[in-house]
Image (tube, rainbow over all chains, first blue to last red; front, top):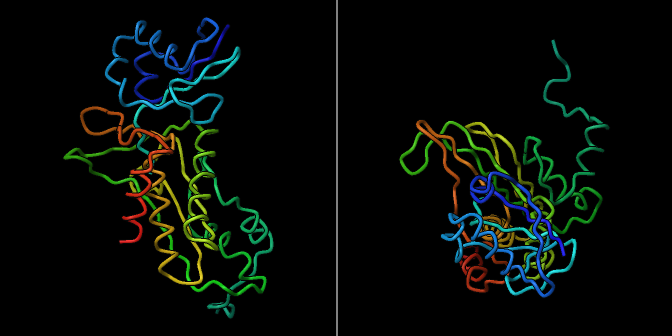
Length: 81
Length: 182
């Protein structure tokens, strides 16, 4: 199945794109998408303990199971205000 | 000689615009407190009359940070999630300070030195709750809202990275409440 990945701030800069598509196996979680990305972009590794994540524009944990067509977002530490 | 000096002239169009202002918003438009104050006190002008206080907060782009001379900031957000985060913060405020009416607007895009980046207003029967709800709101925005600022300073630029955004982190929430009620 196919998911869309949204990246923000420093993660977007590292990847060089705000959005990318990933093929994932059934049973994939947000965490498995993250591990794919760390493989593609080794600089992501230092964010392992710092990021939070969302699915379809709602906060979700890394063990959340994904469905075909989901939008997965990875959020580096925030700095609004 | 201007004989209308000192009088308030009603502007019906502006009035309509102000009262239709959403309580929660994120976008590229410039911010001001007056429309938020109008939005949180709308009922008061229609005879409700129970409010005794409005507390406001306006966050500004500062010309220095961590020893750097800041030129300007660029804010970006995951907008649909930011709106949900604002709704969550509003629900937390309502749960903790029942009856308080809160408005929260955040700006994104390029902001120059001195421009407002965030505006908050909270109306309540008593000042203590209005101040606390206002302070709690900005603390929670900084903790959980998916918004990022990129600082352009003399000599380079850097993404500012603060808190890991976890709305269910009870310790962070308790900390925001402690700060708000200090």
